[in-house]
Amino acid sequence: MRNPMLRVLACLSLFFFLVPVTYVRGPVPPANDSQYIALEPIALDARDPERIRVGRLAFLGGWKITSDNGEFGGISSMLALPDNRFLMLSDNGTLVGFTLDEANHRAIRPFIAPLPEGPAPPNDYAKKNWDSESFLHDPGTGQFWVGYEHQHSIWRYGPSFARKESVNFPKAMQEWPDNGGAEAMLRLPDGRFLVFSESAKYSEGGYQALVFEGDASEPGSKAKLMGYRGPKGYKLTDAALLDDRTALMLHRRFTPLDGVSAILSVARLADFEPGKIATSQPVATLKPPVKVDNMEALAVTREGAKIIVWIASDDNFSTLQESLFFKFQLLDGENRLKKTGPESQNEKAGANPGFSTFESD
Image 1 (tube, one colour):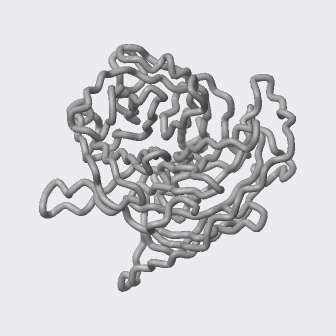
Image 2: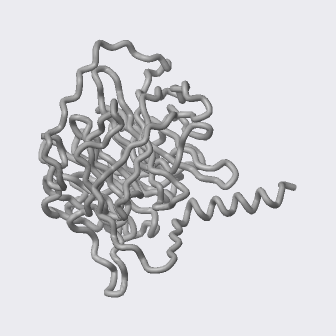
Image 3: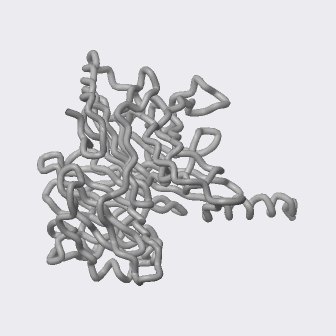
């Protein structure tokens, strides 16, 4: 029989991971709207600071993100924009943006601000619950798409989030579990949208996903059902296109005895078809002693011939967790670092900060 104390500690860890807890003593402190974001460099493996490899990922940098702003935290999805500009989306409807100065570990031109509009409370007595989980951007039009849980819907916003342009509450999504909504979204090269449920089970195995013929935020957009089966025991938290044939899929798992871990895998876009069950091939597993938390946000960029993978974590607004931000290079199929020419230097973003400037000048 296992040590009873071990069971107690395991149950407590599960409770604190799944249920954000805030202890308030005395009057509630005034809201803090600080726009400052701090980046603290961290190693991939604190026990072995020289370690840079995990599966097919080569570690290029890592940071713990903090801010005194009361709305900071809960990072659920993110976008990598030009010139090392990042836009992160919290699951409380908050946008977090900054330009990453990797050499000096600084967040330049930071801002923290709420989305301009979101789902209305279900009744007059309910609190606002903008559980925003997934995020897309069209660099050509400047438009953004956000997927919401609880009040399952897809919203489209204009450039710089100036206004809401369209909103759709797809009928099929209304059957999804309250906390199992649009966990991840993809926009395929042919214009179709994929919206993945975190926990709505598919009849043939795995979890449900919807294939929209067009813009998922348009009320008239038709959707067909498919399934996605990730690594056993793991649930999908985000997805990002790798190229016109494949996508990266990010998954997480938490158990009281093993703790938290994440798996990054590659899926074929050709398998994302109505009525089918898509799967993916793992390329890396993040688990202790590697630094890992509730990994929920994923983005892909390129530096010359290198494929760069960015992963961030959701701290659940808990003091027991952290907002982590990692930069990796995805190695080729034989796990070799590709030789490339000199990397071009990123141009510095303009000096004009603020909520209205999401992309670099």
